[in-house]
Length: 103
Length: 454
Image 1 (cartoon, rainbow over the protein chains, first blue to last red):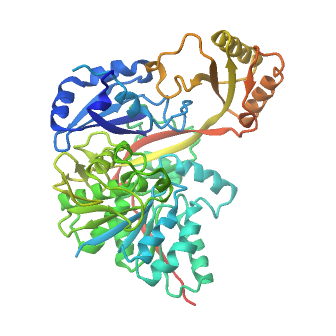
Image 2: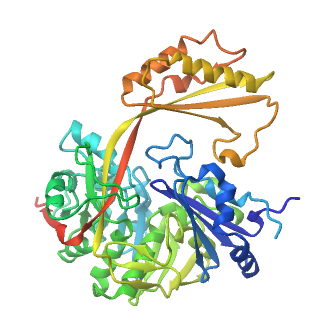
Image 3: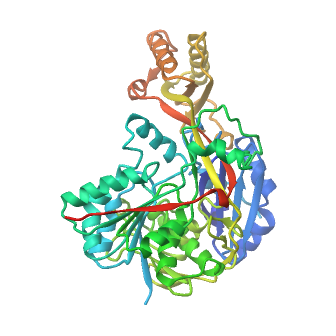
């Protein structure tokens, strides 16, 4: 079976204007170390492709073994303007957790 | 002894009656209701334009008639930002309701000072450039703004609680500050005791989305086996806060739900950008020093939050109506479904020649409507559901667009169908938000009181 990011982590996503954030919460310390090394902001940006128009910033929380990704221009203008059915980005965490993972 | 905060509202439309078991069970010392998302105020402006006595959330009627009587009897103050654009009008409504219910002596506080719509010229004259805080774009004074509200902090709520208010009604107050306020009022925390204030902010942030920390919208809770029949009845969250700021998140006892370290982690980062600098009017909270511990089933203790001095500027959010959007849903099936989709798109766009449709967006539900280009499209699908979104500056243009498409009902690609409920649906308003920063010296909140005397 294909290994996916969801095997190492879970998370949640939400919105602020046209910015979405996705938390990626490691399932254990080993997973967190792997994610910190390999799940870079660039990799996340490449993965989302044209869905994210602006920059992607990654924040690290060693204390709770989680990463927080902030995706600028990710919501087609934001919840009040977006023509997407999920203009609030609630499903974006699932999109990222679907990423194939071979590290 | 800890001080116990209940949270019974996380958005305009939440089930505020989840406050009842908190009150009747004697589980809380105060209850907060957070009603204002970024766009809620612009929606309330529509109500206020139709009737100047409105402009507050309808949920406040339920709070006044169903929650206030029991809370008043047990001396549990209620705090809500559901006053929206009209906290004074909301206070009048609550007073009239309390009089009808015979609640002699109820003291109602209305917080004002967040509404800047009438002061935009004055703010600019006073040196605020009102530039967009993210893009840096200059402010366009000729734009029509429906609302302009600055995010207030905890101060006016603290004042109202110390004056003995039974219900405090505000407009735009930063969400977690609603929850910080009763802690400052109860424990007397100093306004520069940054670590304690930050702890109160984290507590508020964890509580402010009600169901989301007790099993709602949660992969962690799903993996722990939360039952579907429990989701509509979750016991909303309660925090037990200690004098030094440490606190325990739990839920309404004997009600469904689940609180684990993992549900708390999910909510901790919900709608957060830089977790080391979570900016609020009262303090900048740092989430990267805290520790979480499961101390008992459905009890998670949070310690070690640190804080930094409050910002010198406050966030002001302006909202305006930018147009309207409509949705139509079409279905096509095998054979040659993609060819039919292309024919449908061309047909739609030719039908709308001469109409000022501003934007058109298509997606295929069940294929790429959530995950966009991440999801590969099948080569020869059995069915395709085409969702068409389109916008215009006015509602009439959208109605014309729908009628023109309906005229094609018997002339479309083979087997095409249209979802009837989307034909009769109403347009949705498109709101533009303009977040900016202004000096806190330009903002002076005030509190007015009404008292029921029978």
